[in-house]
Length: 212
Image (cartoon, rainbow, N blue to C red; front, side, top):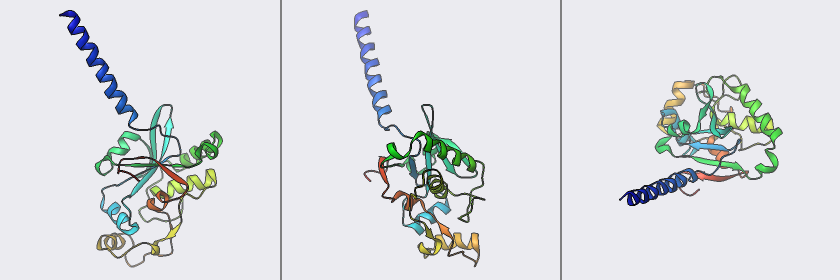
């Protein structure tokens, strides 16, 4: 009987190890500089998705500290959030990770240090709900775009103006009325999560939305 129990215990431990290994391997290794996207659930994020014709309304930048994964994100305020916590804030815990195609050549240790330094300059800044192109306040895709531009000299996504978006839906109009009244700055430079997601400079390395 003792041998049987020992054998059963060994089988259980082996099975548990296999399950844990499979769970661990379900997420490929992430790198500092990867960009992660999700669908947030606030009224503003719903309006952003409508205006940009996108399922994504929030993004951030992966930053590794040792073997831990974090997300540098512009919320209120700009901060560094543990990856699993960040994922839990998205609708259905779904997310997509995009990586620079030639990251090995471009994101050298020196460039990554510059990116980290640029990110630290933004920490603690208030979230920019008016989507202005200054550094006084910062919104999510602006944070990612400016770090890549200033530290790596790369424009990860096409800059647009507010007037380029679809402002026709009632949800979008409501946000506009609340934020701007009748003084919408149509010529303001903006960058959307969708524009960064669509950048040809990136490749998808992980998606919980299905195949991308």
